[in-house]
Length: 212
Image 1: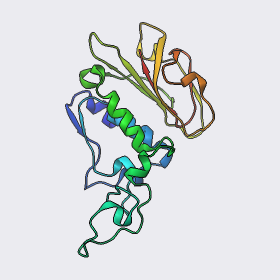
Image 2: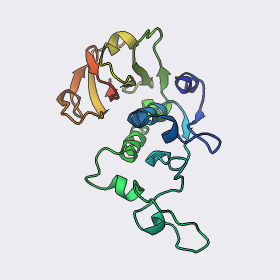
Image 3: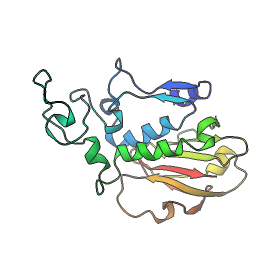
Image 4: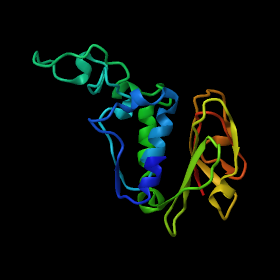
């Protein structure tokens, strides 16, 4: 929330640095995609520490490009070899690897090309009370806007009225991105589906991005 509030006044922001803990060591795994998506879609240019996009941790912090010996780096004897090259870039982008964090990064980067994400305002909502759903609106004058919403709670599903929360002029919204740790079908949130933004049920660890 601190990054969310400060981004409304900044042209750039630091997501992580060498002087901080790795994000993968600081946030529970179920929240990694949500955290990165919420932060990367804020106003300005994010400064990202290499490897956060594949969830590198402090114990295994060398970049992993491929599953070969030494993770794609030189075989020079002067380099310390990496013993664990799992979860590398090549594997995480491969067909059949599922909805990986790296694939989420790629989709979020695509969305950042939209005018409302490029230079639009970040509009938050006050007085959320005990709601576990974080949401904000990105809107550039004269262009379609986007709502970003995520349930960061561990146990509680929540019905949220994003129309009332963000004072939207229309109830109609189109799904452009959805992610969930629940592998069951979520037909309402299929990409390009038109849904009502006033009656959305988000289960724990679900992320939803709507075009409005």
